[in-house]
Image (tube, rainbow, N blue to C red; front, side, top):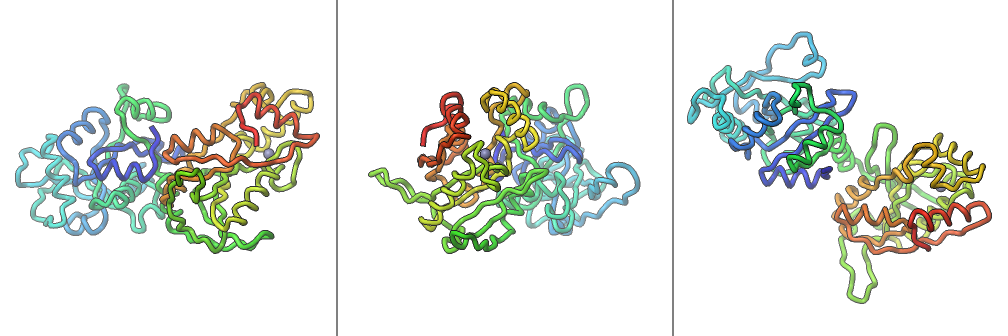
Length: 404
Ligand SMILES: [Zn+2]
């Protein structure tokens, strides 16, 4: 089950674990992550017996200095390439036997996370492997170490985590879809290092002013995937701190007006009449501008998520008489591959739990509701012309879109 950074932080704060995946180009692994301060024998035992990787303790410089830990010398090999900054392994001396039992490692972890630990408390070498965070953290190095510590800070616990790679029954590393299978089996939330990077970037980046024909808007970075940056636009004078408001009994609402618009280069930029995206975009911006509050969230998922080139192929089939849905299916693409999770996460970061959403798309409403955002639908008017009448009929009759 995919979780947002906020949800993961809450799980960590309450003493639970989440799975953090890293990029396909990097280790391409899933690590179990928990707070060292909450690392009881159960957590350590679960990591040792189910995840089966090396149980490590990631920490910031402050905790490393306090415990008197020093970096191990580095030479050759993949560890050197990935730059994992291992420090001297330790065991706590007091209340500890051989150092390896789940109980002993739990005691060591908790002492490493304590605000009053001292170097003389620890025996060297031991069975707990401390890893030092790279200076600059997640913005500089996108590893499990830095990701897990970002999560600790979001959770409001000491910046000391316990992490363990996931190894499969056959001894290989758990990758891809198998991570989701195990997450479901263990009832554990999954998020990626990239989610954490995006979260940090979004918090750090101030919106910029974008003077537009219909008035001054503010443009704010939202998140990025491997190829595209997503963003939002909101009226310049409303700021980014619209408070959450609940719906009054009479059905009227002051909840923010929101349009979640998926990129359509042909419609948005060139006003193509094969679809109604361009007019929907314009109408949404007009309404948000007129209200002086709200968000246009622009997600760069061209062609219902299949990309421009594939969309052009479906246009070719539509020229031969197929409708937009059959054209997608004929080419082996899903009817609609769009994901609105980033938009939901963005709104939740702003504390918005209720929106007036300008949409005719029931899937978008369902995804928002599922993400915990209450939706009051506002129909979005757009004009059917000779070129897009069939396209709009298909969306209504075959894809369940609501009429405007
Ligand atoms: Zn379009």
